[in-house]
Image (cartoon, rainbow, N blue to C red; front, side):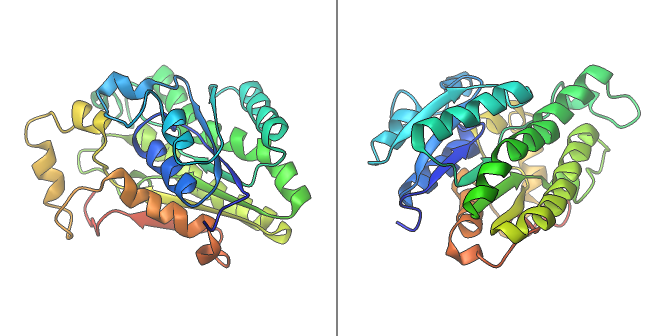
Length: 265
């Protein structure tokens, strides 16, 4: 129960990797705020969970949980969400920026041809949403002189896809890494650590339906992973646990690859 007495906000947490983060933090004793555009979005991809919503799953673990539907791409909505969290719990100690994803089709994500609409939407979901959320929590964390922020980058920001796809997503995630390092420098004197994780493909219901349903795609990626298996959401959440507990007290401004040793993304 290393996080008992702490309050954590996880964006994009109504399913998939965000849900795994929320469950792990709750298991460590934290009260958890679940944010998503739709608090039952897990249904869209047929994900199976243990209750009607992740909020109910968390409450069954014996901690407090609040669900807030808000768009992290909208600065005003993010600021209102953070105000609501502080009003409800009195403090906000941990921020996990998980919301994100590629806008548009993979076939339209090439550097020379990605549409302005898809590019802006991808930047908003991944980079601007992260920035807005960090800005919204910074002052209160500075005032309490403690905080833990974990952002989500990607292997796409560290290595290039062989065919050149996902360029817009990679650019957004590269921005997340740079922003993380700068924010860590700024907030370090206040006892706040800022780090990010860089997963490769993770076997979520969404990825299984959208990507691994394509012929040969799963085999193609598995061939690049020395550990010989796909990541599951909880593999990624273990990295988050490291950063937000005492294990990561002296680590900030870092980007941790959680990719099974993938050397060709």
